[in-house]
Amino acid sequence: MKKSLSLFLAVCMLLVVCLSSTAFALPTAYSDSNIDDGNIDDGVNIAIQGGKSIELVGTVQPTIISVTMPAYIPFDMNYSLSTVNKVISPAIDVTNHSTVPVDISVGRTSVDLSKMPNASWSDNGDSILSDQIAVGLVESRTQPQDFSGAKWLKNGTNNTPLLTNLAANAVGRLYIVGNIGSAAGSTGTFTVTPTLIVALA
Picture 1 (cartoon, one colour):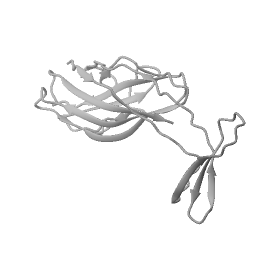
Picture 2 (spheres, helix red, strand yellow):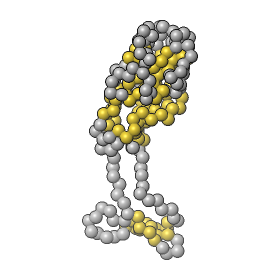
Picture 3 (cartoon, one colour):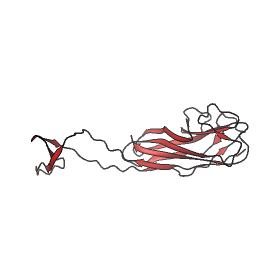
Picture 4 (cartoon, helix red, strand yellow):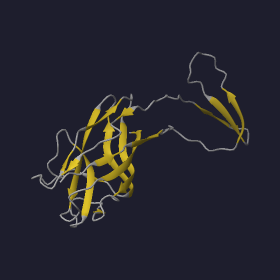
């Protein structure tokens, strides 16, 4: 039995801006501190009511997030596999070209089982009914034989972390894992489309 899954990875880039301190006031005027010493960290004076002022000093570090990964991953789901994992998939290498660590998670997943009328979706592949199919992703260096560490894809909102703190210029590797019930069908195809979110770690 051979299943062909289309796994589309839509990457949403999240720019996270972190401030070392936050000040709330009722500003009436803004001015440069007028210290011409060539230091780019010169502050900005914020005059507030009552004649008092505070000076905010800081720098902005521009960061470009650059992550590459396959956009389409076909795999085979096969009843005849002797392992608990019924999926054979290629390695999904995720390369962080950024100069900072990043976190990668699944924000949302869309599942299309319209070409498999006898099958239904399960959000947990560890325990499925006879008509169910479940698919997940697992961080691994080799093709997984079981479901250890599997992050199961849920139809709809996920908010599931996949790779945490992937270092700058590092490569993380994922594999697809899956489980299929005995009555889900021996022919047909289905499509799973997870939206991956990349954010600063």
